[in-house]
Length: 95
Image (cartoon, rainbow, N blue to C red; front, side):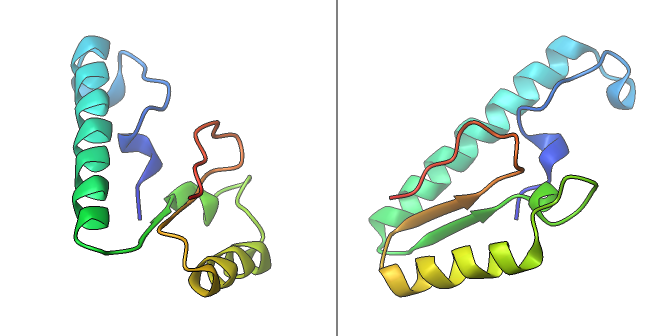
């Protein structure tokens, strides 16, 4: 499960006392590292489910039944990858 604050969300200059450039570099690095790790898992034959914390928490969370249905369908499908994002994320990938 990914915590949304550590991945490509808008960054303010006041975030934890670090400047916006530091946070941009950190967030880009986080995303790159995760993409590499996802690819390594897939190469080893693992299936990968990427579930964003904000899809389960907060005012815009997804309905629990929807999340459970998506996971169930993915498990039954044999697909290698599923990302369940926060509803406003643009980078949803299913394959």
